[in-house]
Amino acid sequence: MRRVYMDHNATTPVHPEVLEAMMPFFQDQFGNASSIHWAGREVKKYLDEARENVAALMNADPQEIIFTGCGTESDNMAIKGVGSTHLDKGRHIITSKVEHHAVLHTCQFMEGLGYQITYLSVDREGLIDLEDLRRSIRPDTVLVTIMFANNETGTIMPVQEIGEVCREKGVIFHTDAVQAVGKIPIDLKKLPVDILSLSGHKLNTPKGIGAQFIRKGTKLSPLIHGGAQERNRRAGTENIPYIIGLGKACEIAKRDSQKRHEYLRSMRDRLQEGLLRAIPHVELNGHPTRRLPNTLNASFLYVEGESLLLNMDLEGIAVSSGSACSSGSADASHVILAMGKSPLVAQSAIRFSLGLTNTAEDVDYVLEAVPRIIDRLRAISPLYQKVSPSRV
Ligand code: PLP
Image 1: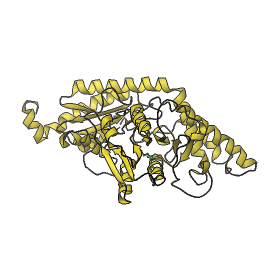
Image 2 (image 1 turned 30 degrees about the horizontal axis):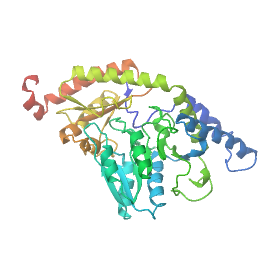
Image 3 (image 1 turned 90 degrees about the horizontal axis):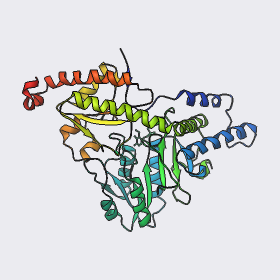
């Protein structure tokens, strides 16, 4: 059976060049970057180079990049680190209802500590309202944390404008850019962002490496205390092989960015057009144009997303339904519900997220299988028989 992996927003395979770059650092170059002898010095040189590559992908300065264990850690560090540093100003944080759980659950934790959190609503396409943001900022607001691009729908937030509002009001702005980095251009010399989180395994490194951009002069306390690594911002001996891998992944993403973007968009559009042509009662979720080039989220009405996912899995196709990442829970996606869509639409949502190894043949395979599976599932759906009795 053919296997088609279209769940790259969940994770990506390791790029062969990334793996190759990492290998020497498991055995030959095993030194501790903090050691002053030759073994440490050699490794430190490569650590610095990796930091330069991560910075270069986003047009940041290398001193503004620190390495973390994952995207979740970076998000936690931004929220807890800023929250606990600016107590003299207040305990109010603003976020949105469509954030990843790495942000939402951290905000809920902060609520338990006595912080007040404002969860901004989004419109039907998944965008926050800038006036709503402006109105929500109070004298005691210490942080605005709004994601760059949504992991479920691919909708890209107005990060430039959000940053401008935050600058004007003197509030620190953090963005969870885990899904955006490497997929769309990011220029941190132009974007008014103070802190930005990213994760390696969404851009072809192994799982377990992340990074944080912290603009010069931004004050936040570390999440992990201990040694003086990472300019005192994140203690713990650096995970050199994985850091080297992330540096290489960023170098490749910068080198191939235009090519990648065009390729992913053309594959995604071929998939989208084919599905919309072949299947009635399909609703797209997310912004039609302000969207990651690799992401397609669609609700196949009158079909349970989980059943569709399992049936696709039987045919070798790996995708995700809004609820899949919450450990098998069948709850409807909080993102799609927050966009004002009905539970029926939310429960029938499927996310296709394409990657570099997907081919036109993969897309055609999916286009052959999905309409057939949907026909079968709708034939046994009592809801569908009510709306379209002639088709069953
Ligand atoms: N933020 C977003 C938007 C994500 O999509 C993810 C992962 O799916 C994370 C944060 C968490 O990243 P990590 O898996 O590296 O902890």
